Image 1 (cartoon, helix red, strand yellow):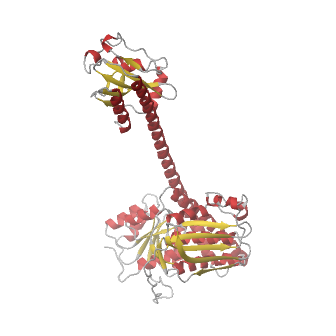
Image 2 (cartoon, one colour; image 1 turned 30 degrees about the vertical axis):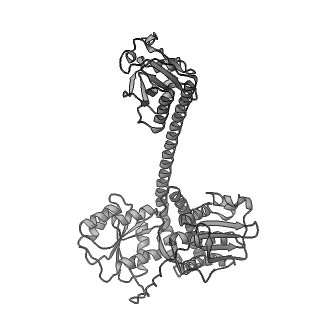
Length: 557
């Protein structure tokens, strides 16, 4: 028996073989189909896809043979790969000096005939063979040899596709990891920025309400508030885009009163519009349903962004919101929110660009008007997440018309809001709240906000201090405002410790973490409510009103 010599480029050949990452993998139907076809066309009981590494030939696919590999020194394929451009044909192995005393010839599987088509990668390295084997002497005709060559090339093609798919899967995995890492980074940075920003905005708001401020001081406070709100909006935009790209944006469904929501938007933007001398308002067509089922927070966000942009880019004339219904292809009956303005307009070649991240209609837009170029990107993606679309029609110098279209799935009749309580001119008088936060500025801010509406406030600078303050306390605290991110004992641990000892009073999470999954984690952990920083005074008061007062106040135990 003559063992085959090593190919002259053996090291590179082995590297090429390893690059396919196919050795010792499970059978795959595509390779098995080619092997069966080779056996059928060549009329042989055995067909193999054989790959030759340092010490063996290993069979990626096999027909008519139980073995999964054999030593390389007895492999016919070790000889075939020495001439990668030719099919090695051995018509009678017993008469061939290379194989006459080969154990594969003298014993099982009793090879008498062999034909192997080298599997050559695009760089010219032979990886192994597609071979057919019989235990009787024979020849292949020209058509069978041609078929073996064609099938061998198909095996190589499948190996390349397999490698490419593996590379693409690895790229996808790395991309997902990168997005997850970026999302986590942005969420952490959002928390770190929003925490001090909340204190700045809160104290600026409190200061602006002081009656004895001089006009100059009031202007300075207004400037602080305006820039703080701008910074908060930028952080929110980046975080929203990150959530959308990571696929972690949660869309809620609720019955939304359209007239009330549109009125809210107009009310919130009216000051900006009047400050520029613009006519601003809204009309709602008679056929528009009273309510639709959608996410009210996201719908309000889109409309605020569209009207805010319209006001920003309109120097004279008007900005108007028009709500109507109609049939839309792909949606059926739909509600259309049109935001029209008489502003700068957009050049036709820049229409598509305004919906791309960090892109604006003109190169100097950011310098002249500010902003990140994320608002319209987020708005379009939110519109799509709500099941609708966002389009624009515009001509340079003639204004713009943005159209938000949503499915007109009518909501149920909305309950009328409860009449205001008459128990006090300050509706939270008598509520007793413990504020737990490791940041003294945050504690001070919440104390000031709540004392103005009649709340009795105590403070604790961490989880352990909160446990001590509430020890044996059954009457002095109606509700706990609990920060999530604290050293030694965070909000989740503090909550768990309170519940474990039987404390059932309402506990509201207070945090700068604003991701949807953060809220879900809080509610799943057992918090009764969730508030984000910067603190919205109305949301804070509403949460206390919801939980601190009831038919019977909940107490420890």
